[in-house]
Length: 226
Image 1 (cartoon, one colour):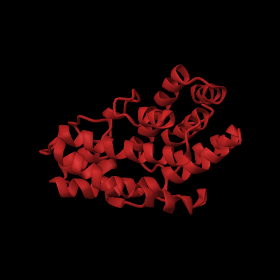
Image 2 (image 1 turned 60 degrees about the horizontal axis):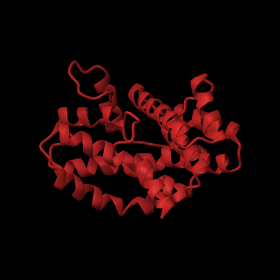
Image 3 (image 1 turned 180 degrees about the horizontal axis):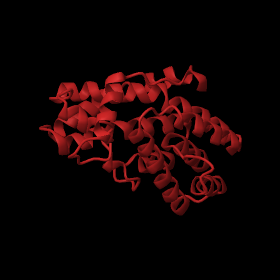
Image 4 (image 1 turned 45 degrees about the vertical axis):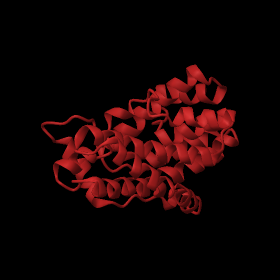
């Protein structure tokens, strides 16, 4: 029960990571009419989860295994590998900003030698500190399972987009919760598919999303940082 409570804490949408300032490209998707209603919103979230399972979650699992061995040098290598595969400026900004905030919070709340060392590496610029990799380091230190880590990561991706949707389009809490409920059943498949991949298999091919991210950088009016 304690482990469940700990996992729920790190999956809470009010966790102070600054994730609420990012929309994962949804703002541009709505402005360009790629997302217009609840069903297209669901498809957008599903695409984001598929992207994450093919890239972020693969790196997360590799980082979890390395952290479990106490090998933070390998964790740092995985971190840099993932960062270099973020094609656009805003996704790079999002993953390092939320990752750093997450580790800063964990250092004060959880403690632990590996978390403090990981924070030192981020603060000194020795590693980017991508959110998925940082989450893995924290979950190993906390004693939470790899499965819990993947669930929390995917849940956070979905909730960030759906929370942004409530502020950007005509959709209510019941619709966003329905979307979340339906997509949650696919997290297990995401875990299985990503666990079969190696770091060199990382890919997040979704050209429309990449174009939307690039468009957002030059937007004159915007509510979110991505």
